[in-house]
Length: 359
Ligand code: NAD
Image (cartoon, rainbow, N blue to C red; front, side):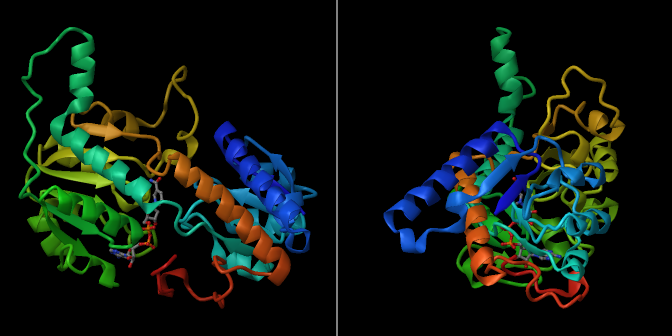
């Protein structure tokens, strides 16, 4: 079995190689149950997967991709021509994958459905805390010997209302932490979960927007959720509300957010994800001219924090991503599918009509 890993960084290589060594150790301890991943041949490519780089998959049986790799129909068809049988995603979200094209091409697509919801939740809370108490500004000031407090005033979170759009694994984990702060928790989710019981109250989207001091996004990006935070939605939010997005950039109409910041309707925005992140995030562009005027305008606001899609980035999450990716391969080699397959039940139906719970 040969696996081509795209968009790989040194840390991906380290954790995937460690997972393969662990599989080899398990295989040595019990040779009869030696997993395929113990002997897998892995090629690491720094390049992102796109039409021009599909050729790097030549000779591989499967590829491993991340959030900003392109898995459009033309890329998937080209992968099929190279003989790829499986696409292993090192992430939970699959909005960037044309699952219908994959099913047509007979390629299994599997994700890592849950690698550490708490890692993302804790980062969302870090963004709330930073944005509210302005520690990003205080840090810079103190280093310059400026200990003045003007402009650094925040609000006590105790007693404030936090609204969640999406109460899956990450939404619930974040809501639990914010409840611990003494916040009132509201949520909108078309598929309510018992896991949210005792934490907060479900309401309609408009009510959540109108009643919350902080809105935190935790739903997947689908046709039905694209730009769920647009001009209209922002207008329904409380003046001075904070917006936090650790889910997917496409959930937010960034230009509408900029207008609301200029009008001082939004009190602050923290984005770990951005709709145009594909050509920028995960690489160092500090010595270049960045041509994305929307992102650059956004970053001129003192009450905006942008991070480079790092909410998942903990040791524990990387370990689980690597282990789960190899478990997906082992299951695929034996059965031709795996429990995390996103294509097995997809009979060429429209993606938005799929139940989204558990993906
Ligand atoms: P999940 O599948 O457990 O939960 C998603 C929830 O969204 C579900 O409860 C679903 O019912 C709900 N939902 C679906 N449509 C909705 C709508 N129209 N409005 C409101 N809610 C809706 O997923 P999760 O593990 O909690 O992850 C959530 C998202 O976080 C993922 O889709 C992914 O895009 C993102 N994510 C980001 C990072 C990061 O590093 N920033 C890491 C992991 C995941």
